[in-house]
Image: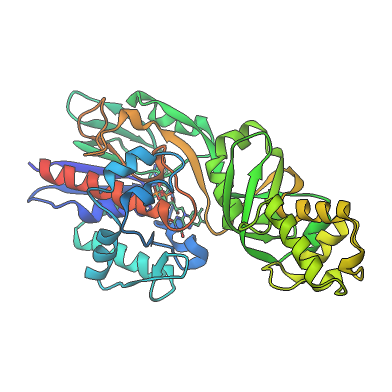
Length: 407
Ligand SMILES: Cc1cc2nc3c(=O)[nH]c(=O)nc-3n(C[C@H](O)[C@H](O)[C@H](O)COP(=O)(O)OP(=O)(O)OC[C@H]3O[C@@H](n4cnc5c(N)ncnc54)[C@H](O)[C@@H]3O)c2cc1C
């Protein structure tokens, strides 16, 4: 009799694993999904376009984009990397395109086409998809595992893949407790900063192309576009800071001082020099009329206001004290953050199954033969840009190959 392979979770990782297992006669693949719909996150991902992966040919550079799991993905990417993802989808009729920031999307700009490819691949592999099957306990047996499912009969798995995604609370991992794996307590990653009652929020919609974000009292510092929203700050520079600082910012209960440099190419001193030169060269120009800086006019005007400088003031009349203040506000504007807001386009949980208990070459548990993990359930998360799906594809593919070799 063939083996029964059970996959828990009908998300990106569960489907990719189910599609890539090479079956022999008699093998059964059952995929259990607790909700009534599979691939829900794929559908809403990337603003409905699904940022499938990130264009990169360097495993070392790509791995650095994972605040948790960097060393682990460095190993897994040697088995299945970005070019493999691109080829996998292309072989099944879906081309991916690269955008200016290296995010990769389906050429259709529609996540439904990713869903269609995955659904077809799983159907072709004869996977038995069972919806409304909430696995609430897993008991390891001498041979395989018994899965307890709410309102349904227990089922037996010879080989078991857990691809249930991340959970926001530690107690939500309780159903995995019999497996004996350590769990890193989950905290949110990829969120935006709330800056209540700061006049900066009146400038919602404005952005700078390259800012630097620092968190006072920590070593956290990231660069990238910074966007002003009606609740505070967002954009890649902020999201990256939230990802690399996920644990520290949670420990601060999301109350901290952020320092934004609106011109990442300058520091306070070099910008002060720039202002002094500008003053010499344009003595009779108004301060509101500075040219050649990638700062939107309304933001510049607000930074003048924060520095107690009238927009109509001429450069020649600008006292050194005010000039210094302006240099500080442009390159290190301090704002008080009180709380966070979930980034709607893409968010993940940091935390999950500790990587020390999982073999990166096989995705098999180090404690139980025949048990595998894939996707966001693992304590791996990337910054925004397609990194989280790449981890799902890679870990699911490795688990599928290991299982295929065994059956
Ligand atoms: C709004 C949003 C947009 C995103 N956009 C992007 C993007 O563009 N690019 C990117 O790289 N990443 C993106 N991400 C992150 C990415 O979606 C996830 O990292 C990825 O979906 C993880 O895949 P997964 O299969 O591990 O988990 P999931 O997609 O979460 O799937 C897990 C599945 O398991 C099921 N399940 C859980 N527990 C059980 C149980 N006990 N029994 C049975 N079934 C169970 C769940 O119902 C779910 O369907 C986005 C996330 C969000 C929330």
